Length: 124
Image (cartoon, rainbow, N blue to C red; front, side, top):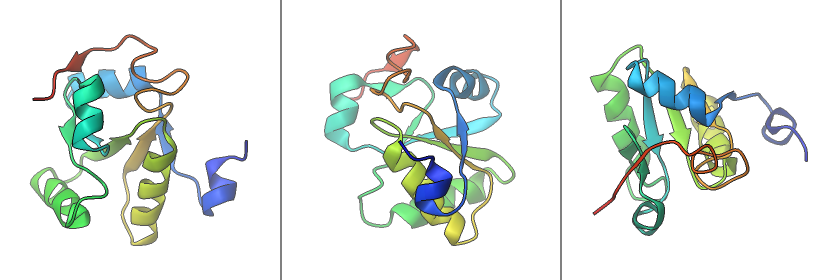
């Protein structure tokens, strides 16, 4: 497998699920779950995550709103297996965003949130 920096042109900072969980608990990052409502319903949300579907209209406007509401706080993206989070972070970085991270393994990938048995919150 090629590293994300090779595929996407520049590297995106990544966090392990455990690092992301600890950073959310310490209020050092915003964790944004960029999957869709069906996926949230299937697995629940990582505890402390904000659900924001990356394919929904106005995704960038909504995530920009989060950034404005919490200036200076890093945003970590989590998805199903980690690949989409890297792609979205890279796309936003190409538009000048900084302080973005992707959670390695996402929710369901090897070494991901569920594999690490980290807490989840049910999604209505």
